Image (cartoon, helix red, strand yellow):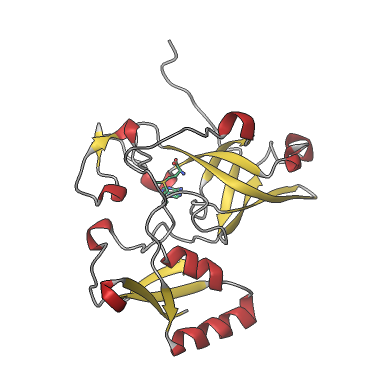
Length: 237
Ligand code: SAM
């Protein structure tokens, strides 16, 4: 029986997400998120991606390189369940697992081959800058899309919170966008998820949080809105 397997990355992710905090828990939740997989030598050959552009989406198999640990635990506390309930590690998409491997389906935006560089542009990702990529495969709808699939612990997309801008936040956004390009949709889609730790969800706390997205350091607060609905306020960019 195979005891160990040694794998080398075939590429590395360049992402709009510069740190783990704030990254949506699954791909597709922030369609405005963008990035690219840069193929590493000796895989950086146009031939290696020939025909890939015929697919709208790709699977990325990658390493949770910022969650490497020597030990593993048979149960984990998924943030999705508020961080209190335990499930078997193999019943979740937790980042800490016996083999630190992740799997994400993302939109393929295009492929650029220039000189010795092969860049696979993607969107809707949930990967941090520098993520090592082990493999890329086309998403094939007739096999990968399962119409009657259900998940008991994550039946629906997470709750989406309304996002508002303070006047200062809006001014900072305009200044950022004039210098670096569009970022408003990305900020709103990320903050709609309430990126705070699970135990803070559903509560206001008066704190200002920060997330690094593209070249921006986004500051936000969670406040109580009409009828107790929690709202996200962007206070600076
Ligand atoms: N879609 C993948 C899966 O199901 O295997 C990843 C799901 S995992 C719950 C997504 C989270 O992993 C993100 O919110 C981010 O915090 C974290 N993450 C992304 N890239 C990472 C990396 N390279 N190392 C460690 N954690 C990472």
